[in-house]
Amino acid sequence: MFVDSQRLHIAVQKSGRLADYSRGLLRDAGLKIQNGKNALTARVDNFPIDLMFVRDDDIPTFVADGVCEFGMVGLNVLEEFALDQPEARFDVVAPLGFGRCALRIAAPEAFAYSGPEVLAGERIATSYPRLLKRFLDDRGIDATVVKMTGAVELAPRLGIARFVCDLVSTGATLEANGLVPVETVMESEAVLVRTRRALNPEKQELSENLLRRIEGVLATQESKYIMLNAPEAALGQISAILPGAEAPTIIPLAGTPGHFAVHAVCKESVFWETLQKLKAAGASAILVMPIEKMMM
Image (cartoon, rainbow, N blue to C red):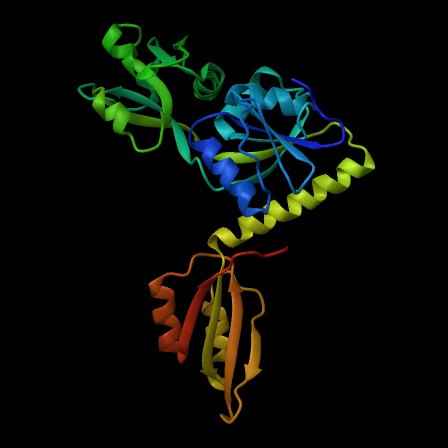
């Protein structure tokens, strides 16, 4: 795989949900990604960036070795890698808000599970042996970890292990195989990682520009722009209700003495209950709008 030394490189999963969400995040950051025939890379037209499409468990290696300056990967994959290579040179830049799941231990439905101590002496099948071993060691549990690379949920049916430790999002796969989750090993989601390898000044500037764009996209995912009218006496209470807002902009309403327009960026979700509280505090003409772009 040829790597252009003048361009930034981002490693992303080559297929699956994380691949789709990763591309979507970069497009939201204004990157125009070519849809070429090359299954290994894609060029960005309006920014000196190449995407590298690789297996998810290869992404930490690409970033740690500096082949790619950035990577988008599940935290579970990253931590499994880091437990094997603690000297790996990368940093987690930010959680990305997608690919949420949990690594969980599951038992057969008919098993009377009373706590992690019942795992002692048992066999547990998993694709994440290091994360599972850390969980067991932290609790002083001596169990046999059986490494599998796929179809972990079939292990009890095949007699390989009584328990499994696998990623769970909806739990439908476990249920279909007669298993129920009983312990959470770790919570996970996609994260942005960056190499610790030194970059030349040009690449460093490009890197900071890219990060500002991505941070802007992430900031808008939950953020909303709120506009409302309120009497002066209610401004303090209304400002306290606005979720995650910094100091709002307050503008006198023309022709209505003692009344003001309030504009605020709320960095948390705005629920109907919030609007009801604002209304009860004296707000009127409340308008909530999505934010398309925001530079932090």
